[in-house]
Length: 200
Image 1 (cartoon, rainbow, N blue to C red):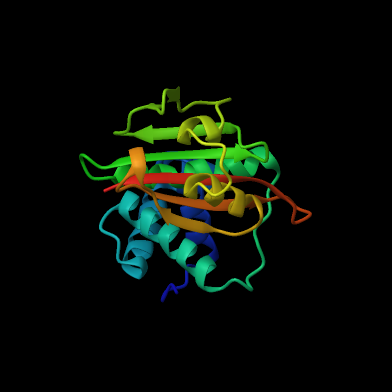
Image 2 (cartoon, helix red, strand yellow; image 1 turned 90 degrees about the horizontal axis):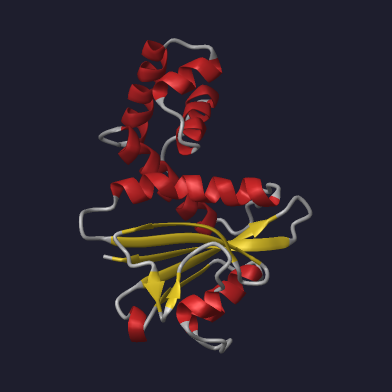
């Protein structure tokens, strides 16, 4: 659980950074000077223990994920379909930027039919099991299985059933880790999920 609390303004600045805005753009959006935004970042870094802006944002995202994982009774955050997927993909960007050289990472958002709606990769081949990771491809194609008991397929199905899941993979994906997180709409219906495939 995070041991710090951000002020409303600090939280606004972090949220805008997660959305990909620069400090100049954040200053414009909040009608602040760039110097004031930098002062807020200094305070946020001190609270969070981050070294730089990207590192700080990544720590906050990780802390939020950990808080959500340890507090299952917390109300879920709801967004319209595209906003939810866009938010999750943008939230992954600082983690992708922070990935050490040689690390592999793929992040995708799927709809209930298991079709990839958006994705991002770093240091990972796009071609898996003869299928290319891309918009319109299915999770079944990427993992080369239609078996509901296959760990990768089961993880996505669990997420589509409201359960965040984390599994170590085998076979062609040996040594890789898959995490899936459900996406809910305003009526608490699962509308898709985000998958994060990583290799240290």
